[in-house]
Length: 117
Image 1 (spheres, rainbow, N blue to C red):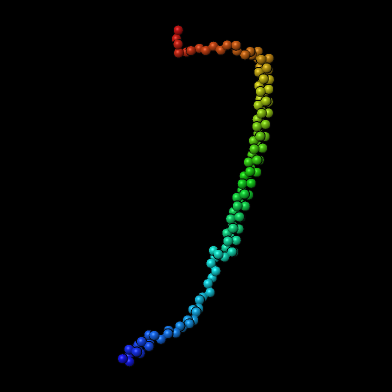
Image 2: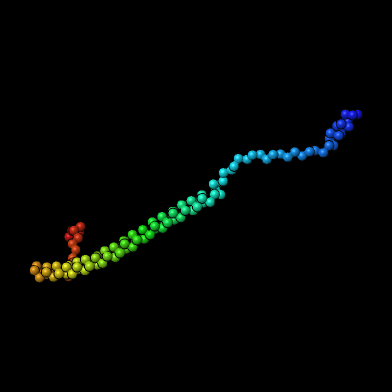
C-alpha cells in the first residue's frame, strides 16, 4: 500500500502558503461629488442666484416707492383741480344770474305724458 501512504503523506503535508502579488490597480479619479471644488461652485451659484433675487426685489421696492410718491402728487393735483372747479362753477352761476337773470328753480314739476286727461 505504498500508494496509500503516498496519498496520506501528500494530504498531510502542510500547505505552503503562497504570497500573492498584489494586483495592480489603476489610479482612481476622485469622486466629483466629494471634491471640494464642485461644492464651492454649487454654493457660489446658489449665492449668486440669491443676490440676483435680492437685487430684483430691491428694484421693485424702489419702483413701488416712486409710484407711491407719484400717486400722492396726483391726488394733490386732483384736489387742487376740484377746488378750482368748484370755485369756477360758483363764479359761472353767479355771472349767469347777473347777466341773464337766471334764478334757481324752487320746485320741480313733472308732466306725465302717458296719462291723458
